[in-house]
Image 1 (cartoon, one colour):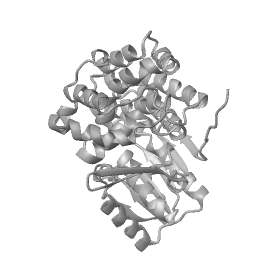
Image 2 (image 1 turned 180 degrees about the vertical axis):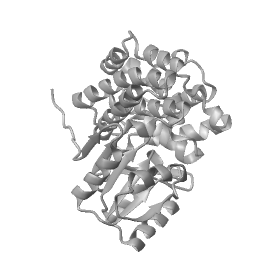
Image 3 (image 1 turned 90 degrees about the vertical axis):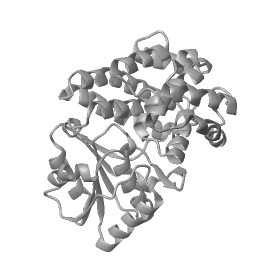
Length: 354
């Protein structure tokens, strides 16, 4: 057994109903006293309640999906103007992404308070969109110093968004099994993430007010992100980054739709990963476990439902091909990508696609 595994330096505070107290304690631990709070307009009231005991110099709500470069530039300027010494982000992946964009150039510490299962808070991955192209990279400066997890903050997340966000976390787990730096530690974290999501997400659907289901999903989101942060971006994430940046598709829903087709494509060529994923689902085949869960959750079905046009498939496939990781378990051609995208566009059965 030979591998190199990166463990990122980060503190995690997990406790339902404890976010406000945890924030006060963690910001004090950082020695910060001039805080910038980032939250979307929808979540600014929640953020205000949570940060009521902090010295907040700026409350910022210009949050945009995929973090356009001009949005990031405005946020950096605002942070500099107010001379803040820490950032508290309250929200999902777009909110965390904006905080990361500021931290990348300023070195300001970030305390992330997730309200979805996106997982961005546990990675050193940043993403910016310019024009129709989304660029991603890794930088230790963008890794939040602290994550404050509080499942009560996800209770108001609508069930359809919870499902899409949870399946986005599951995509982190699956991709971590065969990404460029996949290793046994990533695989162990990812398998536990899959198991916890398969247990928690159905509870979120049947009883959205269940703290138990929400806690399982939030715990799994963290595990999935830690595995992904170490393993890197595999085929699934490369596909979704191109689709999101070039066609402005919603992040979580795109991941939820594309995932089964990538699993159906790569799974047979990666038997060890396939076995681990299947075992985490408690099924004989990984794709059966995923499809059973998606059906139970009423998961997003087809890319065409979110504005992706069929005639865009050839160009999208050409754009994705150069980004395919060279170590993918199975060689990838433009024809393969067109077939995958066409099936995801229509919502065809992934088991009949490859």
